[in-house]
Image 1 (tube, rainbow, N blue to C red):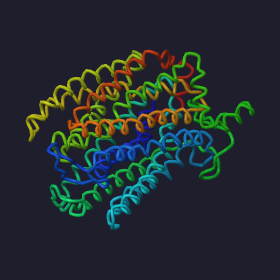
Image 2 (cartoon, rainbow, N blue to C red):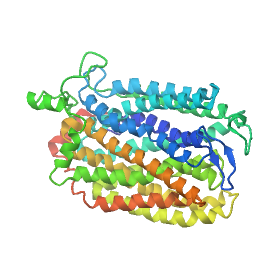
Image 3 (cartoon, rainbow, N blue to C red):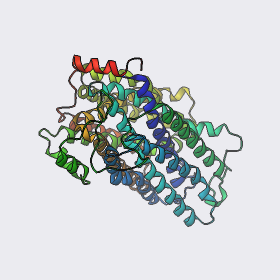
Image 4 (cartoon, helix red, strand yellow):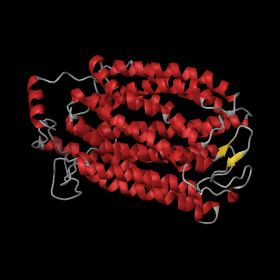
Length: 498
């Protein structure tokens, strides 16, 4: 494994995680506001105060994932066929990251356009373009690591990629805290006031500006340090057939059977799925459904934690973001051991252990959070039990999630790494589409019944983990055979001094 190269490739994923983390924390607050358990709104969202608007807010938060389902497999597939002087994957990063940054910076300015309807329409339009840009570059940038890494060490390599993603998550969660340190960003206090009486422009603007700045820095580092094998003469030209780069020599492989290449190049939207379902033991199918199940639960954490912490525990945004940053912070410390153990004991075994750990810690959180609720206002010392449980849950999440994508890569044909990466993110996006809608519907039903919607928060996560563990036992393949002596000799010659 070329650690230095893998870390620099990880800056592409780093940029994406910064964006998604702040986006998923902030956008639900902007759309649905912050409502205390007493029923008082401290921020009224763009969608108003009716409980039914929870469902609409949940649907809008699935927009990125609807786009991902429709387009990420396509973008991953065309990156396999990219004929460019920059290589197969880099052109997508060069176009996608700046577009996403521009959208983030523009978002706060929509609130300056008069009536609430106009504001909401402009806001949703920019969100759409932002999500399109993110879907455009995520599968290609994630396909770059397996392009340069043998299958036998992809778990360890992906642990470094995930470590970079964990850094991105932490940075994204730190943005609200950093904004709170900027003079003049504290909003006008209007407890119980209407939308027009609250001014959150500077707070939102600084948040999106900082996020965009971090993404731009990641782009600069990525372009300076990552070099792909050129596959053509132009900047962006999609060829007719997939291009394969030898993972050992980093040279473009000769074309295979012309008929097979043409068939692969013309693959349709569901062709990869057809191959996956037809697989003899369906291991690829079951690992993807497992990912769907546990991310279905985890997306509730990602989607609602900001509002859960500010509404149920009555924490400030900065404190809430720091609390959510605990899991990815632990993931950073645990990422490399997770990859090492997967290669020593097997990816599938380590993934199962990770799910069990998350389940146990979630049960602990279900018991602990109502006890903390009775102690509001909370001090840092009183939050320690929740912090410990979240730390251990972060370890479990690392064991599972770091090894999921390497299993998919292991089961993918060599000339379809980009396509299978797109399918992986498509199934992840499907869970992220359905989960916020299901969670928001659950919230609305509980609210109309007069109950506290936040009591369903962690049980919802637990259900996804239980289903994921059951499905995990159906996955039979996904671990790689050891490298041969000849393969090791070629790799050492290729990366000598690298």
